[in-house]
Amino acid sequence: MWQADEGGSNSDTFHEPEPAAALNVTTAARDWIAAILSRSWRARMQRLTWHILSPGSQEDSPDLLIAAARAFLALTSLLAIWLDSTELARLASVARGLLLLYCVYSAAVFVFEKKARSSVRYGVIVHIGDIVWAAAITSVTEGPNSPFSLFFLFVVMAAAYRWNIRRVMWTAASLIGVLAAQAAILRISVVHSFVGTDYDTNRLIMRAAYLLVGSVVIGYIASNEKRLIREAAFVGSVVSLPRAELGLKRSAQMVLCEIARFFCAPKAAMLIRIHGGSTYLLECTAGDTEKDWTDLSPDKVEPWFFSLAANCAWVVRNAATTNLLDRTARWRSRKSRGEVQLPLRFVENNRFKDLLLANLVMADDWSGRIFLFDPQPQSDPRSALDLLDRIVRQVTPAVHNVYLLKRIRGRAQAAQRVRLAHDLHDGAMQALVAACYQLEILQRNSALPFEAAAEVRKTEEMVRKEVG
Image (tube, rainbow, N blue to C red; front, side, top):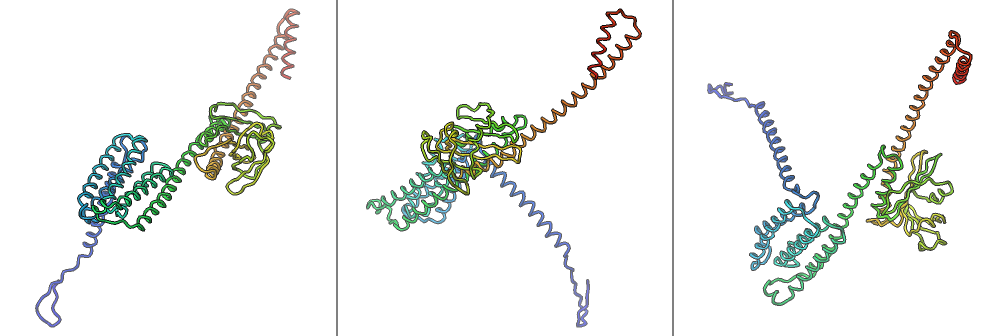
């Protein structure tokens, strides 16, 4: 618009209005486009990562992820030493060349892991190679004082990802031996004059201690996580075993055999007591899992259901299994412990040293107990108790559902049979009444001989007697 100056001057000034609406639209469009590009970029990165890390012919191998981490560590180490050399000048070219070879080695291992199926022996060979590479790289970069000691930690984490804590500790011992060997080699005068560096004893001791403590923590966490994953998968598989078409006994038999197999128990037993009914016993061994249920008499039931102040307990006998006089045993559960006097008949029929048992209780319909004789679980007894308690708490409702469904089906079939019998009975009665009337009409309207009339009268009396 045009506007006159305040001093009365005739000069005209043009003021352009600010395009606020256009600015807001432009900003919104830019933010929208940026969001779309950001989502597209994230999706592409996710697809690329999944394509790189997805195994080729391997189904579930940890070596592929380890190979990817190894390649990333090699590239970052080469980049770090190329930008800022931390080793001595006389070994700079050696360190760069060694890291370049390590990058090529990591890429080759990754491609091989992507395409081929690795074996246990191959994993051990690659693990030994990682130890050798870590020793070689740190040896040319100040030995025990090397800033590339992260390679040692990578080897420990790879061992924890592959195996159990025992092999992790063997790996840690090997790496500590490498540190000690490097320190011993640096004490040689020829090597010392060539390398021109001294190792720090305090730093050597502290790095060895860090490596040992880190290996224990990483190995324990990895082993515990693997155990939890394995146990969760096992609990899920056991809970899925009871099925309505199998029935109560067959479902309980499959559950018992699977639990005995997982806990490595040479003998297992299960009792199911139907309240107001019979009590059934199933005993299975490691070599024979197809035994039938046995209907126990009341006098044989009591030794199996001895009193114990715990739903799930580990029982250990004080005496040898051949000594039947000493029936005292110690037991412990998740929250308590104590002693129990085992029944004589139970000890006579079952020779054992350790016993893992759990109670099955479901409302007022039925109850039971699981026995695992001389189990050898993969974990410690406390973890085994927790696992068995979790299995029992989750599998009991599944078995109870099978029991209820069987009862419902039985009642429905009984009701159907009663209805069918009632219908058949009504139809038969109507036919008999009609036959009785026909016989009576035949006697009245037909001139039958005496003998025939007597037979008809006898038949009519029989029919009337049945009709009532």
